Image (tube, rainbow, N blue to C red; front, side, top):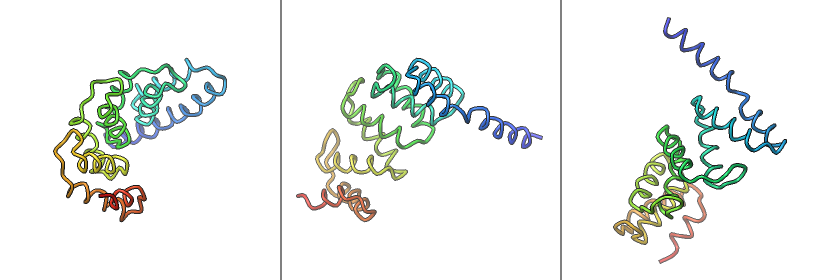
Length: 166
């Protein structure tokens, strides 16, 4: 019985909220940015992680809706905790640069590592740079080379270029 209820919930849940991107796009095309935010907040509150990620991005960059770094941090944390490596990376960037929050390169390293462990290219690259330069963490050129080699072997040109530098 539990399996049947769960299946119905998943089927209905997906269908219930499947229109949030379409509704958001309609509001955007009508320049109704308050409605855009309302739709995104509702979808996020209803547990749609993609909506939470999109909302965090909008709060972070201030496009479409009013910039709010505190809300961006909260949402990126929620989405990162749900396993989205892009959110972990973006949150890491906020900590690395002190973008709307207190700069904390150790926390940035932790978030880059979490994302890199799941093969987020940008996180692995930036983590490699932190190790190479000893930027906020103990310098480890061997670890930096390992990360950039892995990326270069995967076809990431900027990592290959980084390996050529001394």
